[in-house]
Image (tube, rainbow, N blue to C red; front, side, top):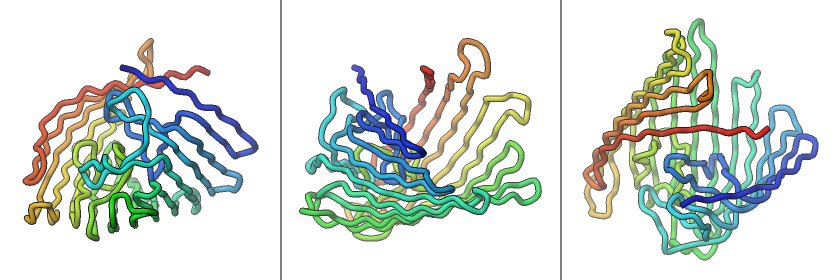
Amino acid sequence: FSRAGAALKMRFSNTELKVGELTPNLPVLTFSDIRLLPPTYQGASIVSQEFKGLTLQAGQFRSGSLLNRSGHSKMSAKMGHLPQLNAVTDRFNYAGADYRFNQDKTAVGIWYAQLDNIYNQRFYSLKHHEPVGSWVLGGSLGVYDSKEDGNKRLGKIDNTAYFSLLSAKYQGNTFYVGYQSMHGDDAFPRVFNNVSPLGNEVPTYEFAGREERSWQLRHDYDFSFLNVPGLMSTVRYIRGNNVKTIGGFEGREWERDLDLAYTFQTGVLKDLNVKLRNVVARSNYRTDIDENRLIFSYTWKLL
């Protein structure tokens, strides 16, 4: 099956309004292209950059198109790794502000989101990168605070999520270490079936279970430093524990990812990205996963 959509775009000064079929990439609703047919949303968004360094955004979505169907329908939630399809709504509202300063080396953000009558969520972020000699050191810190909303169609919701992802870049190498923790009576909520920008979330496991603690080690390499532009590799390992499972025992899980990607630099295939991903994921409370993915990505620019 397939799906087609369109959006009307209007611009005044440095403010842009879009109405129609949208692919949002927000801290509170992140676009996910991990499946053949990525989810889209029907509604309106506005982005304003009238003031230097400050980006203001707001919007409302009335329905969503999921990754396994061609039509669109009301929206539901996902708690941790479990879909909550028995509660639906036709309103997702959001507003947020991001401010960059310190010569664009530092950014702070504050966001609010509401999946009407299911949950509401606040997000606070801090990002910074700093050149130190031949290195570039960076850090990303974030906090999500989520509660039930309106008539509580999923009952009471209580989750606070903290994450940190630190990086060190030297020539073609980038090293990462991350820590993430869940607090409260519930797993992390998000709109089904999207990913989130949590520091330790990956396309296979979320590491966002109830009371879960997780660590990440990662290494990226840009082969342009070996005169092979367009070739990139990623090795990532994440381990989580302390999950409060339905069965009453401690949930534990780990995942190892290997990515090798190449973007064609010239010729008729220019800008086509081909990625090979190998994943091994193990858990004592959810399904083990062994998979290989071959992912093709291409953006066709009409103008």
